[in-house]
Length: 429
Image 1: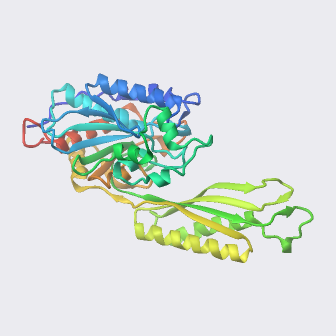
Image 2: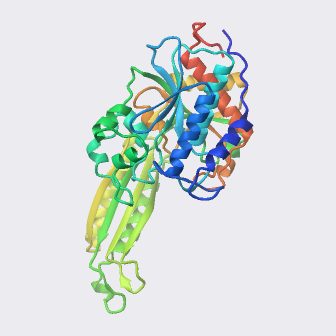
Image 3: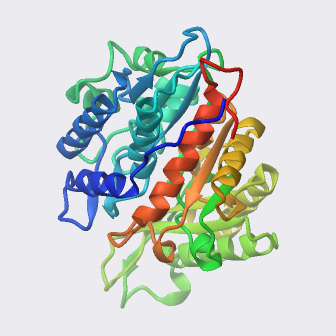
C-alpha cells in the first residue's frame, strides 16, 4: 500500500535543535557538551522527553546509548534503526549529530501519527558519545554496540581529572559491575538489528555549491590515529651551539611536512592526512625544545591505500629521528576499517529521494560517524543535507529548516520501506 502523506515540520525540528543547543558549557551560538557532564545529562533528559512525546518507548543501555522505539507487529524481526550523537566538541555548533537524533525522533513520530505500524521495530538511538573530547576515544557508544571496544583498552583511558570511563559512566547513572559487563550490556548483533540509517549535515560545501538538496553516502572514510613523540636533549637557546643540537621541534616540523608529502603522493583526493595536535616542551622562547608530541590523523575510503600511507609515515618518522639524532616513540592509537554503504538501505534512501522529487548526488563521507561502526553490525547508509558554506564544528554551523524537513522526510520514507508495513507486504514509494 502507498505510504500515507507525512506531516513533518522542518521548523519544529529546527527549533528543537536550537533548544537542545542551550544545554552547553559555553554560551550560544557556541555549543560545548562533553560526555557524562551535567549539560550532557540535561541534553539526554530533553531527548528522552521528545521521544516520549513522539509516542516512543524509551530505554537506555549500560554505556548510555538512549533508544526510542516504535514497536513492530513482528517482535522477532530485527529492528531498523536510525540516530546519531548529541555530544559536542568545545565551541561547536547546533546541528552536528543532533540532526540525526532529533530528526530521527521526528521521522518516527510522523510515521506513528499517520497510523503507520511497522512490521519490524523502528528505533532511534542517541549514541552515548561520538566525539573523543573527554577520553580521547571516538564513537564509544557505537563501538560498544558493534563489539569493537575492548574492556582492557577502555580501562587505560582517563580524562583530565584522572577519572576512568567506568567511574564517569557510573556518576551519570550508567555503567555496570565491570567494564566488560558494561560493554556486554550495550552489544548488538545482526540478529536484532537489520539495517541502520543516519541523517547528518554534510559538513562540507559540495551540496550547497552544486545546488543539490540531498547527498546519498556510498562509503565512509575511516581514520587511522597515530601518536608520535620526538625527544632530544634540550639546552639553552643562546649557549647551545647549532651543530650540537638535537632539536625535537625541528624533527616534528620535518615530520609534519613529510605527512603532507606522503599523502599528496597517493594522487587521490580521498586520501587526507593531518598533524592536528602539537605539544612542545619546555615551550619557552629561550630553550631548545627537548620534546615534541604530535597526533596524526590519516583517512581514506580505501583501507589498503590508507594503511600504506600509515606505514610510510611511520617509516619516515624513524628516518627523521635517526637523521636528527632524536629519540622516537610511536603508537597506532586506532586503525578502523572504512565502511561501504549497504545496498538495501542505500536503495531505500534513493527511492525516497525519487518519490519526493529531490535533487541529489552520490558522495563519500570523509568525516567518520557512528555509522562506521553500525556497518559492522548491519547494512548501513547515510543521507546528507547541505550546511551553510560547509561549516561544521564551529558556532556558525547552520542548516535551514527547509533542508532539515527534506532530510527528515527522506529518512522517514526510507525507514518505512526497510521496516515494512504490518498491513502490507511492502511499502510502495
